[in-house]
Figure 1 (cartoon, rainbow, N blue to C red):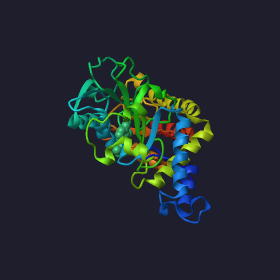
Figure 2 (figure 1 turned 120 degrees about the vertical axis):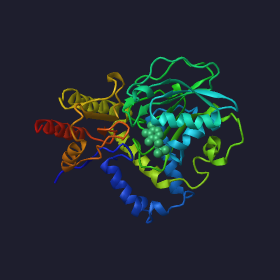
Figure 3 (figure 1 turned 135 degrees about the vertical axis):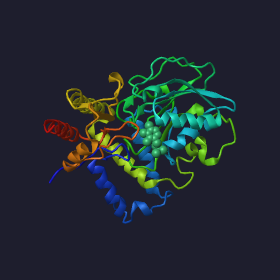
Length: 360
Ligand SMILES: *Cc1c(COP(=O)(O)O)cnc(C)c1O
């Protein structure tokens, strides 16, 4: 018998207790005698579930009352265009910091609607760092960042400051939402696909400051209009009820653990133990700029590229350590160590790294 640890970048591991609740709800939801998968979103049970999930998210992230919380479909990728569609006037422009493939995709979509000014980019160095010197453009509607770069393993440790008073920060937090406390007041809009750190695929969280809902820059397709989803409490059309349920179970798990403050401490310790193992190893190294290292996604490679990645992947696989293959644009290995990955999983990986090094 060996423990299995799944280091997948997304869809990613979920707490065991959440998987158990999900399997129960699939058969018989809260003792109602029917499966949640068969339940109408107009039923009292599902309406209550949505209210509860929104309330739990609001309390975990201390979302102020002047922000709305909605649960959408279409993934974070849909937000790449929904953000400019809703927030950018015709002929308007916004600033973007390019820190990886997801930022690049957000920039591409913005350019179909208005103009994205790329005010800083680490593309030239294969996104190994977070740019820190940039100048905002006069009249830019907002500044868009990707708070954690899932593929390249970099993370904003401090958020950009000093925006014009009528400009605001927009963040794609898909891969580090709920990993630490954040000051929501710094942001106009935050979005996050659930399947990295919050639940299963199929649902995307959007937190939006209420005053931004008043702007009507263009005639929008109904499904792309934030104010419709706010007015309809995320039930304009059939929502992904089961995914929202699994998110809520994950939020409850996090609350029981002590919330984002508690998980933040755990995440720091977990990541540091892995960074230390990489830094002290003679065969592995980190491709990422030291101070920008993500606490969520940890890429590492062989120092010496005559070694075969497959050998280490197979070595890990036999020990129950799964999905460690690096993204093709970085190579090597990537350990995604989101909230639900316990220290025991990271320790098992560190042991495997040490053991493998000995055999070399
Ligand atoms: C995974 C990911 C996305 C894309 O999410 P989808 O739900 O597949 O559209 C966007 N941004 C970041 C930071 C991600 O990690």
